[in-house]
Amino acid sequence: MPFQDLSLDDSMIQKIIAKFKRNNMIAWFVPDRQTALSKALSLIPEGASIGLGDSVALQQIGLLDVLRRESKLGNYRLFDRYRHGISPEGVEDDGLNKYRALTADIFLLGANAVTLDGKLVNIDGAGTRVAPLIFGPKKVIVVVGINKIVRNVEEGLRRIKEVAAPLNAARHASKLPCVRTGKCNDCSSPQRICCYTVIVDKAWGRDKGRINVIIVGEKLGL
Image (cartoon, one colour):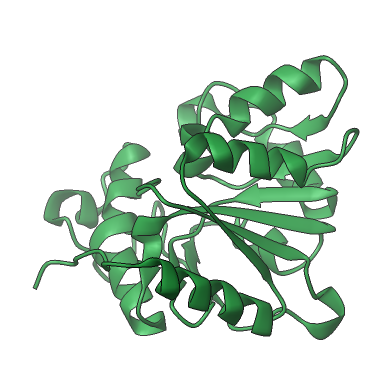
């Protein structure tokens, strides 16, 4: 059956936030994109170095535009892999900035799915998004729309294969089978974007509070 978004109320959102806390991560719920932008900026200290993971949500809340403008003024050091957008055609200095992101003060990304019990589910192509999520940057900020919330990890993986992966493949103008079929296939293409599956069950105890999740009460991303 087609994948459907969950219907969530305030009490369910608060339970998710509590689950993230139990899993050594910090989560907030904000009602809209503008509030999400303000919250994300409040978590980034002036002068910080910032790495980016491929994320439509970061664009949609206006965060990339602000960081690019402020970095030109010297307020941040932005390792910008996506200066003209987030498609491969627009990538500049990718060979350097994807490595710089691993040791940045702040790493920004979205998520493919968030579970009701406070887990993050992501599938990546080259690993440049999930690697800094796990280790490296001092602080990680994940911006996720309410449409990314799922019941459990299994449903998160299903969402990725039936919704996110085909849409991402199409966004990157690839010729993967999932672009034609609308569903993830076990392909062997060199363009394959479903290579590394990372499930954050719990942040390491010494990294408590390193991962920050901003849940936005709007549909964001893919």
